[in-house]
Length: 262
Image (cartoon, rainbow, N blue to C red; front, side, top):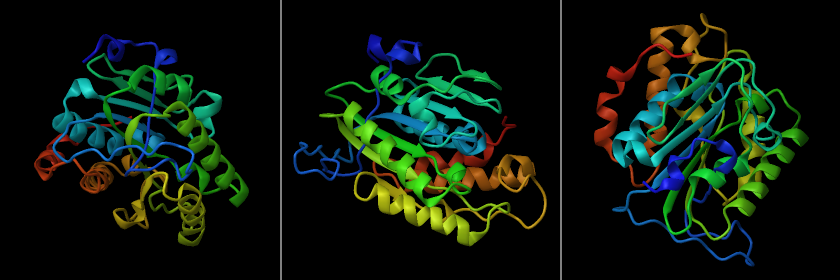
């Protein structure tokens, strides 16, 4: 891994995103090349409290096993929505950062690194990248306008920061919950999917999750204990399988990785 990827200061980080040869849907932007299935890529994972917890830990484990620990970076901030990664608003319910082979940073209260900082420090010109954005759960209670605006602003900034990069982008949407109705979650999913369009491949987490009628806090699978962590692991494995350049061999050990999460 290059010396740039060893930097620990998030203010120097750099990101990228795209799921196929695309120019962010704009003809004026040069299209990005689709990565060959045999090439290994650098991976950037960005997410909310689900990524702080078992879902994020399992997805991170799978990519580290497949692409190498030095090629994977995870940033997760509890309570975050797309706007949080633009404003840098601090979280007070959990933060986790694991960049390459550096020591993991974990704290209850922490500033959320801004998207340009993450992109600038991690993604490099001339290298292949996979960007997985696991955000949407915290937009379910928001208005349609907020969901549209935050998703649009995040993608516009991502486009600006990753211009000319070779990237595959995947957006993992909100899973099911007991706190919010299926109808409300569906509305948010539809709004975000439409806003994302062809800029990233949208992965619908509802296909892989079913929050039980009793137990837990109604939102986080980790709060359900071992049974919830199992759901989170299966969710991460399903997402991993939807992303090209990943293999089925890495998911075989998923259940053995189910430890306690924040």
